Amino acid sequence: MINLNGELLEEKNANLSVYNRGFTYGDSVFETIRVINGKIMFWEDHYFRLMSSMRIMRMEIPPSFSPEFLEEEIKALVSANNLSSSPARVRFSVYRKEGGYYTPTTREVGYVTTCSLLENAFYLFNEEPYEIELFKNHYINSGILSTIKSNNRAINTLGSIFASENAYNNCLLLNEKKNVVEALNGNIFLVKDNIIKTPPLNDGALNGIIRKQLLSIIKKLPEFALEEISISPFELQKADELFITNIAVGIQPVSKYRKKIFDSKTSKTLLSKLNVKARLG
Image (cartoon, rainbow, N blue to C red):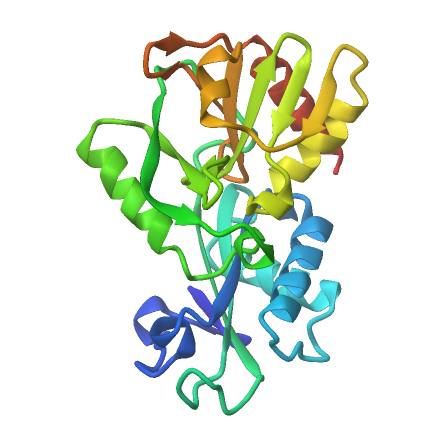
């Protein structure tokens, strides 16, 4: 079942127009959300990021889009797909209603929500080899548009094809200043000695939900110093650890970048604390 503008429909009946602006212009934003046994993980953060993304895209936020209303919409869809007692992955997409060319004729929005079964309720530590490389064919522009989750994901798509063609598990993306910004599907963290670094949002890094959770966790750990600072590609091979974060996997440790093999002690520690926070939150 799919939720299309508040109506629960079977997938074959949930149709969007070919003139939908999310398709024709990428005029759409979305959230990927974990729902565990009917409970939305980090819902407040998802909600406020969605509202912020809509404002940045100059979309008109409907009066009905309260946290309570959208939460019930998500839970109703999960229930309709018989996933209320299972871990589920939900994608909540908001698009500007059709009309116009580059200049829209309206700022009103529609929405579509899908969900699927997740394998595990909480985040598991992945000890399988995980090799990454830089993707240098195209660059992310530093600035506020790069921090939101929109349908404009050409660089991520091309980078994913490059990774697949060259047998890498993931790639890191650079901005126009040649600084490391993020991975293809999440934020990047670097550990060197007792310092944990991650690129700042003004470098073009996605304002990730798990990124935000980890920043909060790390700040409370006296054994680590946290820096939101630009990261040069030259720092990567000098690091003790690299790990990638997103809502789907939590923390993904990187085992290899070029000739460097990384430890994963810090990412394992942080993953256990993230699971605790998810259970409590």
